[in-house]
Length: 493
Image 1 (cartoon, rainbow, N blue to C red):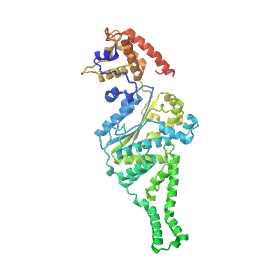
Image 2: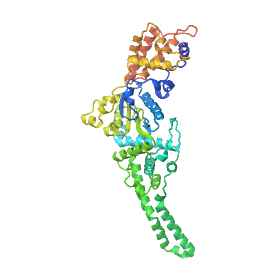
Image 3: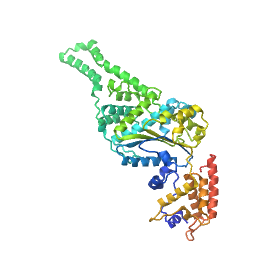
Image 4: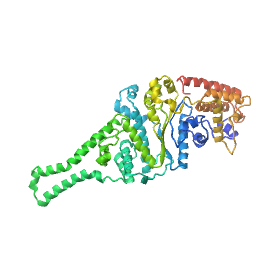
């Protein structure tokens, strides 16, 4: 018999246990994302009106990515209900592009450990600023990404000239969109903000005016012999000298920015041309990222917060997930530690108005427990709403299974996981078995295998509508063997 036939008999329209990854799980996204939460949900999510940091450790399949998706979904709902105090979400979960650029900068031939030894806190800050600024510029320009299903309206008139300058400076340094050219996109943003750059062109206009004047005088007087002397050329050079001096200084600044932004691709000359749209006064004493330090980045982060606050965002939530997936890391706990440890800084994690949600592999908790006093004083994990392990009890997994069955039910029916199994298997046995599976992913895999084994043992002409105790125990034993191999790194799980 077929699994679908078995499920339809119990009033279930689709297999609730077919998917194993929350990112591609339609059952989770359409129903469970709003109603099925881990017991630690409130501690992790907190209050959006006052974003707070949470540090969560969980093994593979425990629901870290599901937590991230739930946080995003709940914040979207919060933003709709509170348009004047929305929360801006930055999803820092794809490390590959940043690590690739960083490795290109510090040396491709170096091994991963030596590369990550040079990764600092300001590299994380640059990556977060890049994601946040690019997302904000996309919204302002109306660029609709696939994951942007809910773009709020932005009142750009709320920005004064200083904040428009701050946003344009942030875009010059951190906007990394691939939709259009760097200068073209920046110019579109400038026009959208109605930011005049005429005053910044005075030296360019002076050079053009002097050149046209010299050409006009020579042509008007018909003294073509003057072109044989150095004086016309000297006047032209003197006319362009202020522009050349300023362009040289801007190029020096642009090279410094391109050099120090190690996780972002920048070509100095286009960046110099963009910086040339600001007057010297507008660039004076601005915290440009031209040095290897965090001070400038903190100020730039504050500038982004100021711009967002004027646009109706009262706080920022940064979601950190999938740190074990980059190809440079390749699941290595040692390399994950090298990448993340600089981020565990109390000053950074407690930055006013920003809540960091760090969803980390359980392997890193081993390193946390081995750290010294200096690390604990710097990280102050006792103040970060830490969840040492994203554990699931057998009862909690039982509820998750029932929630998924209800999500796939037909015609108002309310099937339960108890209904799928023979009466010889009581609820206590089911809960004990689920407890041994530990996490939702293992639960879903086991239930799928149990249904497959049961259906393979019966024909469509002589179906059986409940999984027997013998099938349950044999499927559980086989899965626990595979689970043990997976825990030892010797199997796919």
